Amino acid sequence: MTTVPAVGSFKAFAKAIGAGRLRSLMKRALRALVIPAAVVAIGMGAWYGATHFLLSPSRRFLLPPPQQVWSRSFSDPAHLRPMLDALAVTVKVASLGLLIATAVGVALGAVMSQARWLEGALYPYAVLLQVVPILAIVPLIGLWVGYSTSARVLVCVLISLFPVITNTNFGFRSVDRGLHELFDLGRASWLQRLVRLELPAALPSILTGLRIASGQAVIGAIIGDMFFARGDPGIGTLINNYVAQLRSEDLIAAVLLAAGFGVAVFAFFAVLSSVLVGRWHNSGARR
Amino acid sequence: MSRTARLVDTMHDVDASHLTHGVEVAFHDLDLTYGTGTLALHKITLTVRTGELVAIVGPSGCGKSSLLRLAAGLERASGGSVAVGTESVAFIFQEPTLLPWASVRRNVGLLGKLAKLPHDELSERVDAAIRAVGLTDFADQLPRSLSGGMRMRVSLARALALEPRVMLLDEPFGALDELTREEMQLQLLDLYDRRGFTALFVTHSVSEAVLLADRVVVMSARPGTIRDVVPIDLPRPRHRELRFDPAYVDYVKTVSDLLRKDDR
Image (tube, rainbow over all chains, first blue to last red; front, side, top):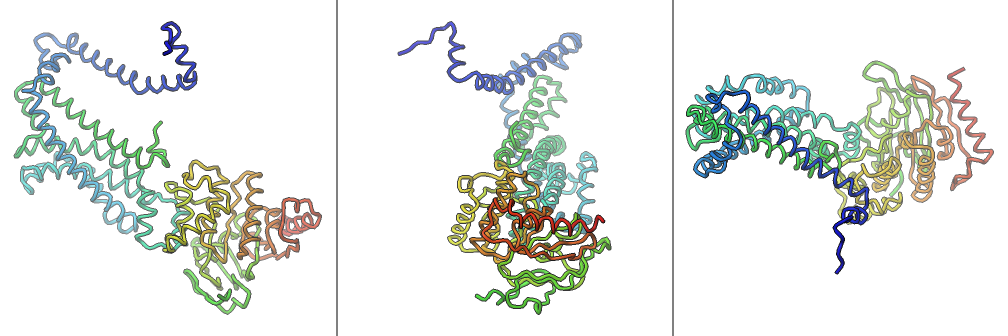
């Protein structure tokens, strides 16, 4: 058995794997771990600073320090369990809403790309979806579909539909003209063109749309929870309750959980994009 | 099958009477006016015989590419007629025009797939075409990992996999560096000698046109008309060394002089 002396072992290691490769590994580790950890540390420091220096002790309940949020909410199952159950409900609503928005949005975007007159006929309504404040139509949704889960899903669909439609439409319209002519020469059928050319070519744009829409869907689900409380409570419902009861620790924990869900969904689509188009398109490539 | 047994045109009206025996492509009194009202081509009459390689040269914007696109059915003539004696036509664009998400093999087999060729036959053709352009080791690579010259070879292989009787080549080597361009020219000559297709080749390069073609069509500036047709009576197969042949140099000079007539 050979032993590596402690002194100089790093040098030996560097020599064994090559200095260039070591530098590259360290650079990647720095980017993947150290920098994000530093950002979290700075955030925590700012939080502590705000609690202790900006707020007087009598008002400190408005922004309790991180360790208090941890001890009273995250590490206490009696507080954490209802939050996780509510988050599961919100995840279900957001996922269902995003799924419907994806199916409808991709279909509409694709249809709109086939002819200018179709785009002219449908696009104003898509814009309408985007510009009408969702809070303004929430009461209408309640009147039309009731105050249960379907209303929450509908809010998610409405809020996340626009980026899917516009990005799909853009993706379909951006297909290289030369490739279209190649398919003309090959006398491709409508279906062949759709499956072999337009859909794969539009995929990077569709995925960009989904990345944006996923964040919107999470917001939509939380807004839905807040307005349509009938049925199992979502994380938005709990947030409302915690505000009413001045439970700042739980409120912050619930907000952090909701934010974590949003980040997870966004990261999921980033990874999906990398897997599906990373090999051939810059939008999905890892930097 | 007789060379002109069938007349299958693509998207425009055809006057088959100009497809006499031994003629594969015929333009007759052809006019092309763009949507903007600009007359691009005027009274073009040209026939390409079976197995012949005809090069078209002319100043920028004279309608060379449009002539080729008319033959492929990608554009419609405003007057006159275009006739192609076969539906076995391949078109090679100025750019490689490849599906970026598909491997070399899938790109080469694309048109055969669209034509619903039987799987085994298509697979054989694709392998042969990839072999013919020397890309066997790169068959599973994506286009982005290939050089410009290799991508152009994929485009050439895609056309070859159709086993076309007529090849329409629209400045296929224009974007390549000098060395790669020369390599591709020689490869095209080799394929032409072995496969014997009919070809219409658009280029800006007079030397390329003389090296490749049996006849060089010299066009005038817009509206594009045929100024002259120069038969290139150089032996085949043609090699790199032909460039130093005095007869080749004479042909280059003749065609260049004809092109410069516009400048005088």
